[in-house]
Amino acid sequence: MNELAAFLRRPDIAAEMEDDLRTLVAVPSVGAPGEGGYPFGPACAAVLDAALALGEKYGFATENHAYYCGSILYGGAEKELGIVPPPDVVPASKEGWTGDPFTLLRDGDLLIGRGTEDDKGPFIASLYTLRFLKETRRALPFAVRLILGCDEESGWGCMDHYAKVEKLPDLAFSPDADYPL
Image (cartoon, rainbow, N blue to C red; front, side, top):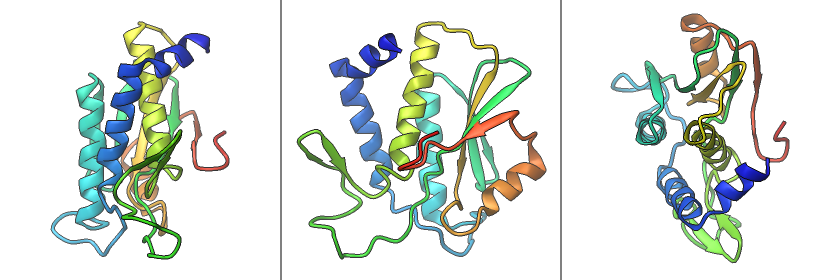
């Protein structure tokens, strides 16, 4: 764990993480009625495209499950761990925000923006953990699949679809906000 912490604290990696989070926060990924082949609206499709592009940028295989959800894959073992950090968000009211909720703001050590805790920030943390494993050539006794559902905030239709088209992971968790494990 100390090696992972050191990796994440490297100035270049920390800056990349913040930039990647900024990219995702900028997408107002609030679910909407499906249109144009996007079951949860174009904003959720856009955030899924952005998240999968980050996975590809760091050399991971990705899958788009008809814009219901997507996957970023690490490892090839038969058993699979699923990490589920959905990038959709609830609507942002003006109440409680001093600026645009879809513009990442740094306040000291805090990063503030819609989805930084639930779940765009946890997605970035999960992606960079996989990046560490890949770059340090760590083999795991299981494959890891980040499952990026686009309907967590309004009904989990994303995971209903996933269960119809893919095998469910052997183990799974969501690094969601206040209850990370």
